[in-house]
Image (tube, rainbow, N blue to C red):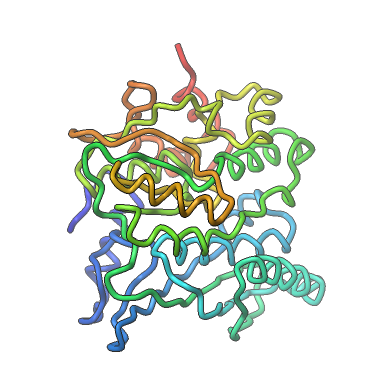
Length: 341
């Protein structure tokens, strides 16, 4: 499936797929899963994904190497959760700056270890290089039974939309760093919970799933495009935001919707459930002592709607590039886009 090319990132990913050889045993097409799935021949699929934290460091959003380690591992593991995989382990690829290399290495390691321990997995090995600026890449590997995997495809009209937890904390921490020097929300506040058990529990229940590494509305925009459907957020943004994110929005005079539209996400899990599977979701949630957050529903049509108002997902997702990477320009444009008249 070739995705709508309105979004610059989608065009780039599609071009990579066109330029590179693809494994014959690989399940799913480009954009269709958070982690790549390859048949092992024993009734299982190998789930593989990789994420790198470097742009956030360059832009000054992550200043503590521990944050970079914690979020690189969280980004990779959330991709496994979004396909319902059990992790086998992590691989690291880290570029360390010459200044204070040992201290930076220890901080990165502590951050990775925090996330890996919370997910019940380990670091298997990796590679280290020297460079001018810190970069932390993390590869995650896992397995999922054939036919039980979660994908981004499968949403039908009437399906209900949920997130695994409250949203907006990633964008709120970034806003605090940008506008308040980190005084409202320190980097340490951004510690995504492991959703591995939740992804496994959603096998056979969810019709589709995706993580929120790029924020809620970007996630919904991608799901709407892939499924050729309209996704309606019917909860008020204030009811969806993590409490600390909502308080930061109030203190910074930001529209709550901006924290859901920003492309700085929080590695949560967004998923759709057919109404007939809601009792199974409730049973799974009870077993995990978990309260999914209701977001809205799917309808025939196309695009994303917030309380009945169309949201321009392509524009919001292209906004940082259109702002030439300038965060203040980006934030100003995003606030204007998400402010209610």
